Length: 161
Image 1 (cartoon, rainbow, N blue to C red):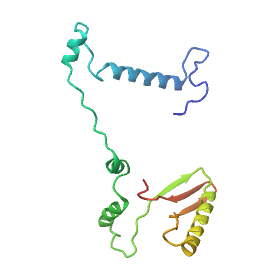
Image 2: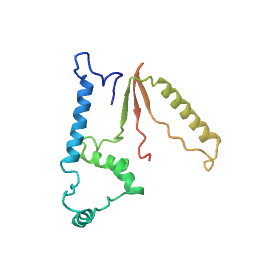
Image 3: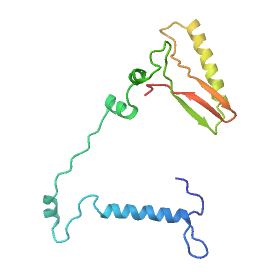
């Protein structure tokens, strides 16, 4: 959240600023949620032991790890998604069909990123010519298109986890 300096202040008439009113409303909603049913409240007449016996044991949440966690976070592998989209696309039968995804960046000068990617592409070519495959570092240049001084499109690198 953006919280400007002196946003929590009150004016000279004792009226809170809009930021302070929104903040106060959020705090009140949180308090109501905590009181209205997030977990049972112990009855005042019951002792601690009786209260604990009345409560059902809480189940621990299922925690995903490894490949299952990565699949939940990143979704299906790109190749599978491409096949599904190609089947449903009216253009999927065209030779040379390829699905690509891009990130639109605005408010940044990405010409420098494009220059660096050109250097990486050139280095990849040199490495392929000069270094044996067993010793060669893996480089995957991606597309960067500058649209203006402060905007551009950057190709997504798929299945990078």
